[in-house]
Length: 148
Image (cartoon, rainbow, N blue to C red; front, top):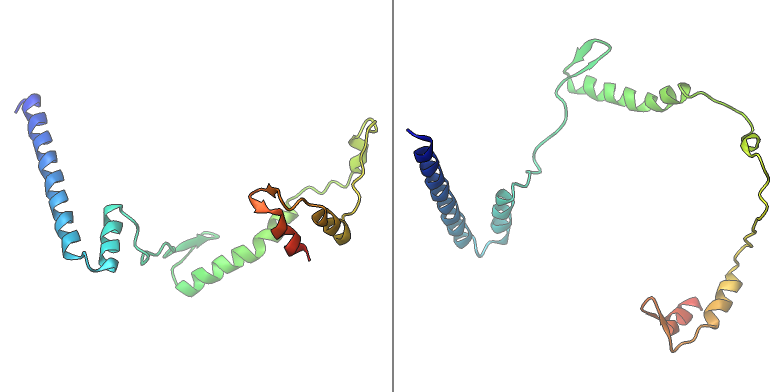
């Protein structure tokens, strides 16, 4: 068979498969048009959504050159790993207790200060709002009512 003939037959086959698939799903939708659950399940198969029944846990693990297949042993090994990983990683950190201010060469020429915001200050700002104007699509009157 020549390549040209092969491509023609391949294209014809793909078109026929696509039509058959369309016909099949149309029939399925017609059959389940009154059943929302089955329709959703059908849509899930079309978009290749994964089933919730699948499990992704390992059936065996290797720890310290030893293979564990018992579910309880696997659970204990994972538990041991995750309860000790924090302290294991923390012990590997180089604790450098240098004074961080030693890296600042010059003192900043300009500085600023933020004063504490009190509840009374915010209430005063709310009470001074113009009720006839909106901000962020929230009417000022609503903000004033909420502030009391």
